[in-house]
Amino acid sequence: MKIPALFLTPLLALAAGTAMAATEDGYGYPDLDAFAATVIQTPDELRPNLKLKGYPYKLYNLRVFPERPKVKYMWYANKLPYLVFAQKGPAPLIFVIAGTGSSYHGPHMSTLYASFYKAGFHVVGLPSPTSLPFMVAASSTGVPGLLDSDAEDLYRVMTMAWQQQLSKKLDVTDFYVTGYSLGAAQTAYVVKLDEEKKVFNFKKGLMINPPVNLYNSALLLDGYLRNNVTTGDEMIAYWNRLTKVMGEEYAETQGVVNLGPDFLYEVYRKRRPDDENLQILIGLAFAITAQNMVTVGDVMTQSGYIVPVGTTASITADVTDYYIVSARTPFRLYFQGLLMPYYQRSNPDITEDDLVNRASLYNIEEWLRHTDKIGLSHNADDIIMGPGEIEWLEQVMGDRAKIWPRGGHCGNMAYKENVDHMLAFFGASLPEDGK
Image (cartoon, rainbow, N blue to C red; front, side, top):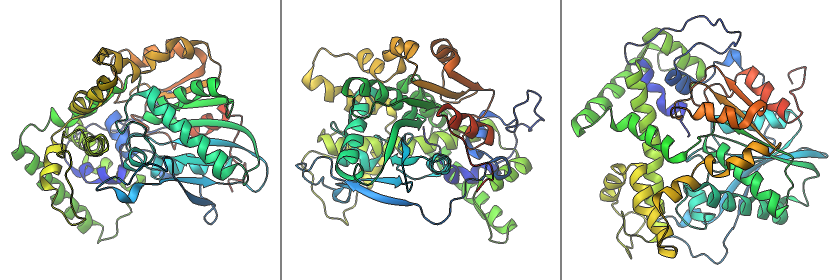
């Protein structure tokens, strides 16, 4: 799941919380609470040097379904954008898949881009199948959420990008793939699919903080907001506290605020927000992603769930009512009200349990147990994981799993030891001179 640190910044000034103790287990990532780690991520001084010279990337656009008419309200997203970092000579190529709702950019994607590019890879960054650009331009169904179906859409994009745009420009020695959060679970499905289609013959794929069961993880994230804020008045009061805090932080810094990990870490140290407030804003960030999914999925499939079928509107139309309804629609209702009916139209016998299984790693358990291509990097305290899920991953993945003692959800991705481990899985490392 994508938890945007910059969006979460104001919460860190709300009062009360737990202290950061010194680490005693040999792992140098700060001993932060799991929710705080998810928000703060990694302070700058604990990151490797991932600065890049100039702008060594190019934005590409791919028309995945040329015959598809432009979608009303979203005519601007008929092509899928993706990012390419190209080495000058022969090099391995790695596809990077974004987390829930994320496009090809963002702090986690930037960490992965810079790490692999500096380690000598061609890097191709893809939006999440749950992002608006991908749903409109590249989703075959318009209702993402099933890992096998999403993997097929991703693989189609990878194949077209390689065959139509990149194969004549990049000298590639081997192919790899990785992703974080939801993109991590999709990574496993993509590698499995490639064993059948053999376009890339991926040598390895690394899952970084994947959900075991997307449905269960989404319910957890929904609950962080909806279990703590239950009325409109509570939501208004919460926003009032946020705006007050934003003003206070702005005033204390005399208007100079660098909204990065160091700033978040310092505010957390001073103000110590409690878990409930951290949960609310993490849940709110996910709710915005779910809101985008339900609205775009409804328009793409013409289901009439939010926007009445056949509705037309100008670019300046008032869509407030649609916004309000979609904001009140949790992921559970997206799953039951849009995704299930879509698949039941072609197969009336399909059940909710069938679809929940297809949205999980349980569905490919036997393959995961025996493949030597897939590795895992995860955190013991990841906030999107239910009881027993980390233990299940450890049991299934064996010595291919690295479980860090803390870091929340993707909070330690940019920590130097994590970056080194990630690159070592692919037989690579950062330059010793740090340049």
